[in-house]
Image 1 (cartoon, rainbow, N blue to C red):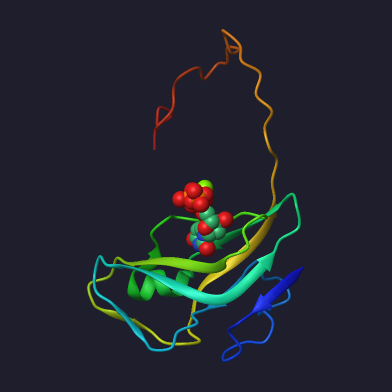
Image 2 (tube, rainbow, N blue to C red):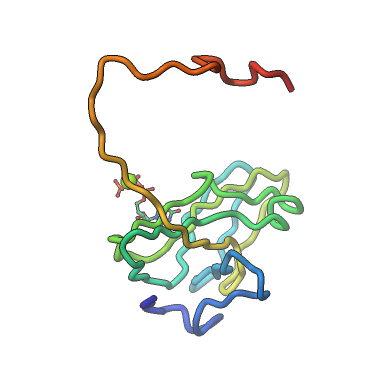
Length: 143
Ligand SMILES: O=c1ccn([C@H]2C[C@H](O)[C@@H](COP(=O)(O)OP(=O)(O)OP(=O)(O)O)O2)c(=O)[nH]1
Ligand SMILES: [Mg+2]
């Protein structure tokens, strides 16, 4: 995959940290630290520009250690990087913890997983087929 890297300070090429890692850690690319107070959000640049092959997307996901220890997670749940996006990959983090959190240049604040996806062709119909579940959902099978 082609990648343009502005962020030379903390990493050369994104790398998988272990042989079985699904995600590549994403590092903050900052000229100065950013302080995020409780319940505040911040858009963190990574310095990475990707040319993702058609049929693939990149998913931006949180890191469990940051979530558990500091309440740092993603404001958009899972970020979607489209294959035709040519802008900088950025991370929308939110501080759900009780204390301020400081992001420094080079900090690994999220991870990125590449996935294949399907696109739907829609055919409009009057009725969709019936199933045993029907319209039941949202916990109807119990906890
Ligand atoms: O966490 C994220 C989410 C998105 N993006 C970039 C890549 C993505 O391809 C583009 C658009 O994202 P999305 O479709 O989620 O946002 P939108 O609000 O629907 O914007 P748009 O109207 O540009 O699609 O923004 C990121 O860099 N980080
Ligand atoms: Mg969109």
